[in-house]
Amino acid sequence: MIAGQSLADGAVGIALWHLETGRWNAAYATLEQATADGVNATDNASLYYGVPALAFVLAASDRPVLTRARAVAAAGTATVTRRRLHTAHRRLDQRQRPAYAEFDLIRGLTGLGVVLRRIGDLDLLREVLTYLVRLTEPIGELPGWWCPHGPSRAEAGPPGGHSNHGIAHGITGPLALLALTLRDGTTVDGHTQAINRICDWLDTWQRHTNTGPWWPQTITLDDLDHGDPSQRGPLRPSWCYGTPGLARAQQLTALALGDTARQRLAESAIVACLNDPTQICQLTDRGLCHGTAGLLATARRIAADALTPIPVAPLQRLHQQTPEATDKLAGFLDGTSGAALAATGTTKTSWDACLLLC
Image (tube, rainbow, N blue to C red; front, side, top):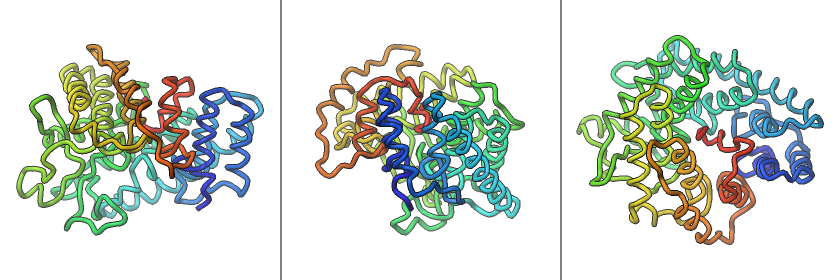
């Protein structure tokens, strides 16, 4: 893989930082670096790699000098998406279970839907939404998003696979996209039913501490047999897998459905998380994916839509005071550019749409 094309840790993600902060010359130079060796438009291209990543970032600027590049990237994204949809529907027709890379935000069709929404290709976006509706339909006794493998590519998974709930790799990503598009008015047949299927599942596995709700990161067949998750409490409050991302998806869903009770529940989850030192002390870096930047960016979006005030100033101080790891690179998702973006407190380019926060 060509690192420059990576939104996660390559030049494409760094260009997004420059565009948000108005450093045009630096942005153009970084984009040239990202595309110097060509741009990937094969089936492993995604929101976070290759031509769709480039399309997402280029949409942050309406400058005429980038007009042709935006058109080329949009066309490439459409081609990739159609191929990926064909493969996914063929798998669904055969009633086989998906790898999460088929549907997730980082590598899958949810992420491609994020790009299509951003660049305004609403017809193809509706095709992605139609796929997501099909994804929520059960296969046998298990939900349609149940993966036959484990949550980590580096480790053997649990017997029988798992249901992944993280916003980065699990069903919470499709939930957030379905909710955002419902709010936009971009809908398909079965749209609300799909949202309700996901919510019913998450409601079933929702658990509570003394201060608020939380959701397990995954559910396995063993958890199903016991009727209780093996995860006994909330873990690290990361954007990618923890309470922040799950709570924002639930809040977006509540806003789309006009469900005040669900909205209060989601907001109580993030408040409980923010007030729990045991959770907060597990954040040891400043990154967007696993660290204080992700928590800060997510909490800002939740607070902006909240029914009652949620203070974010303590999170800003936490982010500022968390030391930067000496081995961190300049990338977006785990590196210094993403941490700097969260610190700015601005979203003029809606850069955090690639986190499914807006």
